[in-house]
Length: 350
Image 1 (cartoon, rainbow, N blue to C red):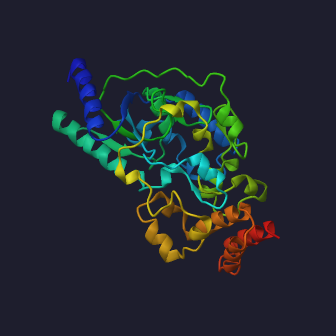
Image 2 (cartoon, rainbow, N blue to C red):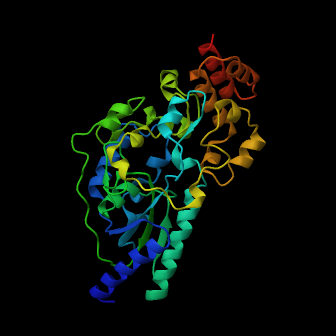
Image 3 (cartoon, rainbow, N blue to C red):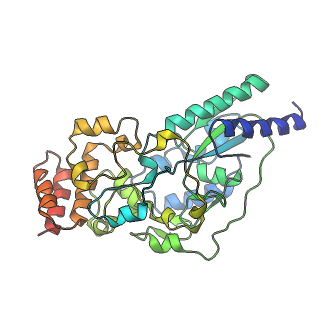
């Protein structure tokens, strides 16, 4: 294929991706030298906490051709996930007896959906050019997806370390198709955070210690999702009613006034999770938890840590007979992890 053929192919790829439900597509090369150095410094400072997988694969994460030999280009895509419904996340956070779940986890798990679409995109490319080398990723392997997306022109990395798009905010998922096709690359966009520090100022646990520098060990998303053991007491009050993840830095970002709701019905809230109370969710036994989180990002948490997180939120809720009674019902739970957090929560009401 000639260079003009590859240029036309790149145009087709973006059109096909849009038809498959991706809101934007960009193409970049595999040079991530600057991102690799920054990432290594981040690891050296221990900011990844217990997430050993983030240091496990060496330079495969920052050198695509080491992860998938032959890779010349990365096709980066984004897909909106903000549900189009009347829920007010800010109001939800203010309802201390209600459960707040990060918006991305209210519906079905995005990994399989996006990976399937990326494979369909690869299939269309194959129909046009014949067999070629590729591999699809959606947060499923050691990939520096945000630096790749930024190089591909999908947005810039904001001070909260999330990717921001000037026309779409930051409520979107990212995915990648590594390929051996020498496609023309897109250009990065300028940074438009300016002097705004809203995300840094709003962080409940001060996890954003400098612009674009996150100490994950302090982040509520890490504490409620990645951390396996006890949540440090110093952070428990700041967690509030957030039982899975935290969206504060996105909720306050001025660019999210341009965010567009998702057209994917799979991302709509399931089982009333957008309006559930803490007491209601704390009553789920393991069977109920497994049934109602099937096909959801919440399933990865496991029932034990689900109860741990809700116990902390109940400890932060207003003192009522119903909340105290709910906590006492779990006071003798078989898990020491759950018992410890329930005991702390009860102490907050006495």
